[in-house]
Image 1 (cartoon, rainbow, N blue to C red):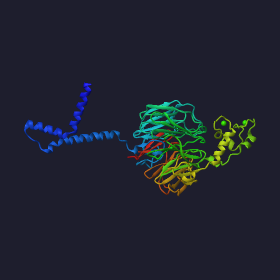
Image 2: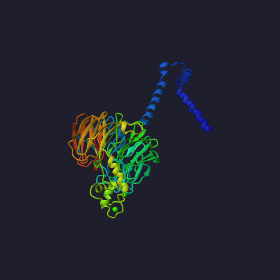
Image 3: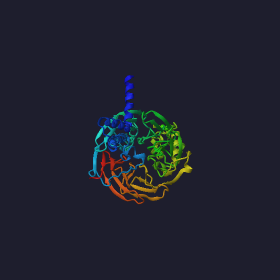
Image 4: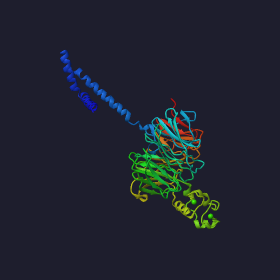
Length: 522
Ligand SMILES: [Ca+2]
Ligand SMILES: [Ca+2]
């Protein structure tokens, strides 16, 4: 007690002493006068006060420097960067580069389709290596792998030749690097690779793997898990992994779209595109706030925001199958063992055979009447469209909140890009389109980028330029604006599935085997 009392009083006296230099000065002057008999000038007596101000300022600056966030230009924190926009803040990227030119560094990575997630001086990616699902942390300046952590997968999701179990892009909020593997669930590491929590989740029931990436909004990790059975949207506490709410998305089949927190700076909703509908969920409790119909049976692209509108573009070959035959006619034709359901062998040629795995929602090898009718209803309503939506209202706002709609130039996998008042689309075959964001006015539609092949990565932009990579491995750079003007076609000689990232004047591109950092050579 005595010690505590002494310390407190002593500290208090010290604070009083420091915070009252005039009194201190007076005391010192008195002492000096007593000692020497000389009264010093006011000018020199101000000196200690000046030093004190400097010291206080230095302390304030030190505290400021240690707590203030690094600039937004150094962050590309999730799938398609800041707010999922695909637009780099205050940065640029090189126009010309290749496997041997303008390479700042190049690092060998395990296979994976996840995009680089960047937080200041670190890059995070995932991959599949020796049957394990890995998360890697790299030094952004030199590409050196700083850490890698692996988890053992559960049952792998049913894939296609173009899928990979490490497809979801990590998300980072400065404290968490949160990754999702469909064959495992969610895991959070700190930025140095220390595991903070894990939340195993059942492997989704789907056909082409899973690819929706987690996002973080308001301290919540959001994961859209649309599958052929029991789709849901999940919110967990970013700090602990504890489930906060889970919304069952009945009526939604397989989907690959990443949620869009909205509004961007203070999100109140999570906007999720899925089968036939786009829905805004209240972030607080996961309840449905508003929705718009008019989308295809399956959504692969993710919505984006700009000019106070939400843009969503969906195209599937399924929307071309406007009607499935009546199930009674099919059973009469194919159900040889008269058990009231169809095996794949029994399914008559045509849509029943072609879409068998899709229609067989629970993947038990039989198409039942209920399964058939459910997907037939979805196919009947399926529409390929680019919609611009006013993001407010309550309930079904389809009739009142669609600002405009377009139906040509629609992409299958690449998400739309909103950039500087325009919407850009890129579809397979290298066909680019551009619309005025506010009105839907066409600037150009299905014009050739001069690069063939499919496109899996989404367009991104910075400093008046757009960048998009073809699946066979050519990165196209073109000017943002009303007229298509291709600036460069850079072949990297390897397939590209991931969307590149732009940070600090560099372009980070993941190919099949490598992560490249491209920059202007000095
Ligand atoms: Ca049968
Ligand atoms: Ca079945």
